[in-house]
Every structure is written in C-alpha cells, then in structure tokens.
Image (tube, rainbow, N blue to C red; front, side):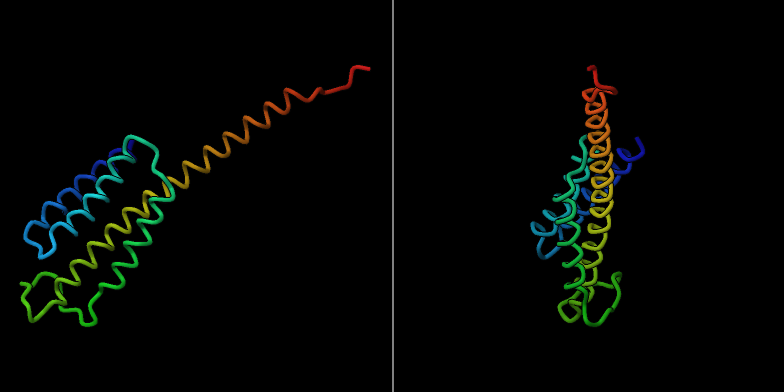
Length: 139
C-alpha cells in the first residue's frame, strides 16, 4: 500500500513537471520526458514495475543529467536569458537527476518483486519435487 501511494505521488509530481514546461524553449521534448516518467510511476502503482524499462530509464536519464550539467554553475533560480544558458542547463540536468532517482526507485522495486517471485517459484518447484519423490522405495 505505501508503495502505491509513493508511485501515485511521484506520478503527480512528474505531471506537474510536465505542465511547467509550457514556457520552456523545448516544451514537447521536456514535457514528453516528464510524462513518460509519470506514466512509468502510474503503471507501477497498479501493476508490478518492469525491471528492464526502469533500468534503461534510470541509466538514460542519469547520463542525460551528467551530460547536460553546465561547465559553470550559476544557480537555478535566476532569470534565464540568452547570455546565461548555464541556468537552463542546470535546471534540465537537475530535472533529469530527479527523474533518474525516481526511476531507480522503480528499478529497485521491480528487482525486489522479481526476486520474491523467483523464490516463490523455486519453493513451489521444490515442494512439487518432494511430493513426486517417494520417501522410500516399495520393493
């Protein structure tokens, strides 16, 4: 239950991030990125998260955050103008870092779910093998 609430909360956060892209120079790209992350969390709230897509999303967004980080950090709260693109780069980089951490949360949950399912499957196989193997031979 707490996992579902966390996923729904993160869905709302990333929907808000997507809505805040209306005045961005590239609103469809960044809005799409945040909508994709919101979709991952919404899907995970009602289904088991998928491990491979979560890992790929984590790695891609982390690499994007690292590659976009400006060479000179000027902050994130000042007004953006054409003379200081570092502010916008820092904002975009931090947004991708937040997305990466949230997708890492999904990856860990998916990994845990996969391990539990595997151990339950192995337990069932061992039980069925124990039932199929006679304890002693009738000769």
